[in-house]
Image 1 (tube, rainbow, N blue to C red):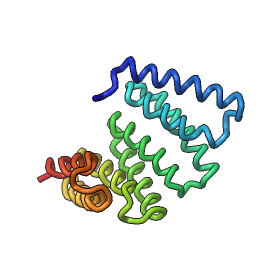
Image 2: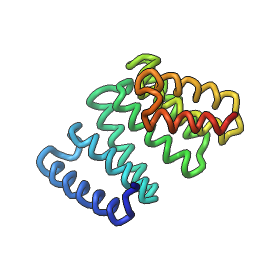
Image 3: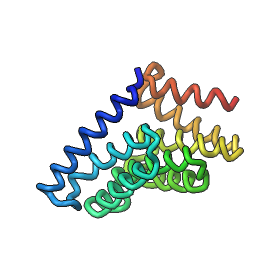
Image 4: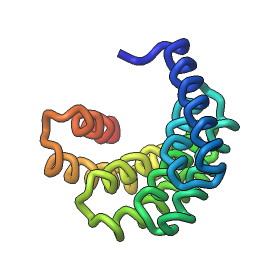
Length: 170
């Protein structure tokens, strides 16, 4: 069951307080804050607060990049989340670039059959579909389906969602 707006706001408020407390102890640029900032960005995005979401995610990306390097899967996850926001606000070129970058990082770091690569391919497919490139969207979704079938099995909710996404393209 999806969380209500009040639940999401309460989660975000609690996480903001936790981040503020950790920042006082660790300092504002400590890498241990990056995952919490990504979670804040995700919650803000779900609440429709796009500017705040982008700011939190960019800060998480900067901290992950500084601590782990630009080619680390944590950076790819931040970039992927930024791509979702760009897609939602209609910046399809920006979203495509973000998903392609996340895909390249994850594929190089984790291999072609990792579920994170499937996530990136699925998200890229959505943008490609919206851009009118059904052929490339189908290819990306076929890849994502194959990854999830192997990694998670046919009954996993993520696999089923990606199979449904693929089904909409014929």
